[in-house]
Amino acid sequence: MPVETITHDVLILGSGIAGLRAAVEIKRQYGEKVDVGIISKLQLMRSHSVSAEGGTAAVLYPQEGDSYALHAWDTIKGSDFLADQEAVWNFVKQMPEEIFLLDHWGLPWNRRPDGRINQRPFGGHSFPRATFAADKTGFYEMQTLYNKLLQYEGWERYDEWFATNIAMENKEYKGLFALNLRDGKLYLFRSKALIIATGGAGRLFNFTTYAHTVTGDGYAMAFRAGMALKDNEFFQFHPTGLVPNGILITEGARGEGGYLLNNKGERFMKKYAPNYMELAPRDVVSRSMWTEILEGRGFVHEQSGLEYILLDLRHIGEDRLNERLPAVREIAIRYIGVDPAEEPIPVRPAAHYSMGGINSNMYSMALDAEGKWIKGVWVAGEAGCMSVHGANRLGTNSTAECLVTGKMSGFLAGKYVLEGAKLPEMPSEDRIKAEEKWIYDEMLKKESGESLYTVRNELRETMGKNFYIYRNEEDMKKGLSKILELRKRMENIYPFDKSRIYNTDLIAAIETQNLLDTALVVAKGALARQESRGAHFRLDFPKRDDENWLKHTIAVRYGEDDVQLTYTPVEVTTWKPVERKY
Ligand SMILES: Cc1cc2nc3c(=O)[nH]c(=O)nc-3n(C[C@H](O)[C@H](O)[C@H](O)COP(=O)(O)OP(=O)(O)OC[C@H]3O[C@@H](n4cnc5c(N)ncnc54)[C@H](O)[C@@H]3O)c2cc1C
Image (cartoon, rainbow, N blue to C red; front, top):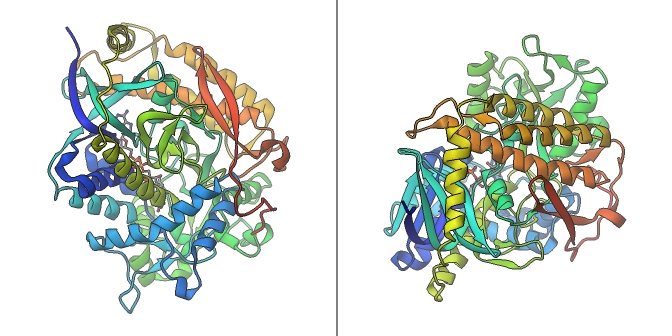
């Protein structure tokens, strides 16, 4: 039976902050002239963005000393000079308007006593520019965007539809395959334009702040389709994941004055970042914590055996904790029975953010390995890499990037449609059959084999062991060979559930494949990069090496199990790289 098709002018894959912001922009610019479909493997408001906590960066108070130049400089220095500087300038300049738009659309930002929008300090920012709504910023951003979108007609949502692959032939975008989870039927979505906004890949690791659903699907689909990925070896470890479960304790907690303490009761950050202390960028703080732990100045969690450091918020006081950090307090009390108003809480670095992503430029256009636009395709949010975060993202710059790239991709994709873009041809019959075969025969039908969950767990253990805060060649080689072994074993997995209706086993199998594809790219890029920069720290190459490595990694699939790496220059237009000191 031929595959059923669904057609829209613009297809948005993902309904997090980036996807929703793109949809709102299309509707507010072009109204019903451009018809939109939004696909999400989750219920729309369950997208991971709802859990963003601490804030969104923007320059709101130049009269008090902040400026675009300062935000750009902080971002570029934070990136360990791997950010593309024009992309950063463009990004910081667009942000204030985003904050004010959200304000007009009803977002309840925290306020100063005089009624103006409040901001707080955040790691690596030399001015308090984290705009926040308590510690539930992402939730309010999502709610505001969704509420705004409801004012418009001419868009349709596909909640709980799981995209399996992007159909690309001859390097051209042809459509998107997705399963309707309600009946397990495969559909082909066709559109003149596609915006990929699938978020990150935190679940590559066991100890992570990310939801179970964040499995690198967009990266893997792009990789399998022959698109290019950029800088994926740079994975951020957030200093304060709650022990033992990894739930995020926002950097806003340190922004409000929280201290990090070792087992001697010392604020050890004075050794590593005397000026910024706990508010140094995340790569610096995470490495400092890990050094303390490795040198025996950490604590050990009795039940899990995990080592940790203490985060002390007691001096902030109950009233301020309730006003500024209510979720942090609630999370600590509910999950580990510790009230931060009375006791310090145990934290350790947790996998948090993918600095790399699908290769894109400052206009959110998806680029191939040669830097050519893949016609009709844009990328927004954490799925993309337009290179504003470089080797290390500053906190609050991600939701900001989601807003900017969402707006830009929506604006440009809508314009593209109205300027006469044509619907791409159908993918070939062979391509459609191959997709059906992969899902129904290779993934679903197998009656015996290995549990996919064993493969998934081993992958996460490997990533945590071999590609964590401190890396070296020997460990990474071991990690890569394990990833290759797991990729082979993946051919032999089988889902226990054979039904078609809400088959979460089948989805977990595809997500595991997606994690394995993403892991391969991370590992290959990390092994090849013989230097330390931002979040990629190698004990065998502990220095940054601008002469040889001031360049972006571009990864493209090569055969079944290999990755071809090429490199492109970093755009250095305003500031030459200097040593990073905090
Ligand atoms: C706990 C936590 C707190 C954070 N706090 C902050 C903060 O305070 N400030 C900040 O700037 N950043 C923060 N970040 C980072 C930031 O939240 C994320 O980078 C950002 O929200 C990502 O948004 P997104 O729209 O790109 O993707 P997401 O919100 O992850 O959305 C991805 C969308 O893609 C869909 N999708 C994915 N794969 C498929 C598929 N195969 N088929 C169909 N749909 C699919 C999902 O259903 C979802 O709708 C935080 C991150 C974490 C983990």
